[in-house]
Length: 596
Image: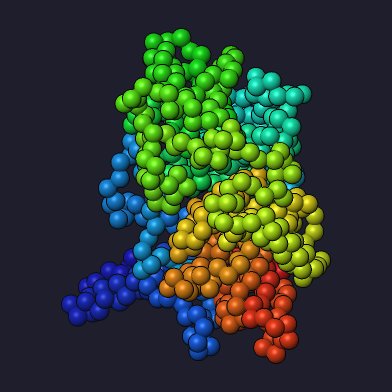
């Protein structure tokens, strides 16, 4: 080859030029083929929008697959997007861990691929203790936290011994110790059903939340997409409720008075910053008489800096009318007042101040945190607490805050009956497609009063109840029923990793998206990102909308499992239809290869 090269080089200049051009063309062609093979063409942001409804010729036969490097893409929590757009964010305030969504023209119009070797997740309840290593190929935490028993790599699996930064010997013993500190009967954390909803901030892989489940206590485990790579992805892969978020500058996406207990175990949060604004955000979401369990060196260490922090933190919570309920070893538990009395007795100009009466404590979507104390409603003040039934009666008992929406007890009960019947019909339609353990993580994309989730009470599942940001803020009713959820705008991507939910329930959400003039095609691609392979989608919407969605199934590699009232000549006398879809399992190569 060397000789051939020399012979060509000694020829005429025209031949030399021809050879150079030819080599450049070959290199360019090879680069193009490589980029097509690796999917880098899909890494570029797409401006083309898929066509919904109308002419069938506009329906794509295929949707491109994203590059393998995007297998864990979270569009609104994408650090690469932040770097590329050079957003000016204050890192000290954790703004880089908050949501920053790309504009429509910078969204990826492609399907997120699973990582190499991906397997159908281990079924619940075994999944709480072990997951497939190939599904989340990140073992950094196993090494970094090896002395704390967060997780251990064992062959093809990653196992979770139940340890944590503060509870090396198991979350179960730690939870029992908290119950004991609070003198709960039999050292059981649920306090005979009076403690149901827990907020765990800086949750790690959510072992604390996972071990609460056996006591009929459900936790919203929160952590950012930070250096502790993929901790929320591990939590969801285990089948434990969790959400990507941070205590930064914006209110948490939860209504006021949602949790009986907030928990921070060495969560490395500076609670004194900005006049205690982060502690005041916890105060907003805690119920009257709610607890904050804090396990951190500041609670027990004797060095000068820790003593200073403890002194300042104690003074701050004192001015917030919190009192120490118990302090033992390395943990302190504060309790909130039951009424507004303490707030009203404070000296004038005491800081933090009370929030303005015009402030809506339940307005959370895109709302900045406020360094003020949210007083209780008149109803809570008179009742000396949230006035909720103990669990499990709480699920079906009309909560007092129904009155905020002028909903009657009769309306509440009819709503429950309606969704019990609909869920029964869904399960009949699914028939033999669902086996024990097939479904664990469920999302109700438009949850209303939470009655879809309530109808699943006998199933071994948990439900992320999503309330649209522009509708009635019924999320507080959902929390008052002992359920979990968040506020969201479905014109944007959800704050979760790919492949984290087994079932998505889409009740009229596409009609809402169309009315808002957002892209239903983008929503289909987002739902595909969220859904696990072999997972299910239940679409309940107008017949015309459902028919349009059905045309996209081949391009998305989804398959229709069952339909109801979809035929035009249906005599049921209503325009709504149901389509149940299953996502196929596919792997990437030069083209999608479907694995049945």
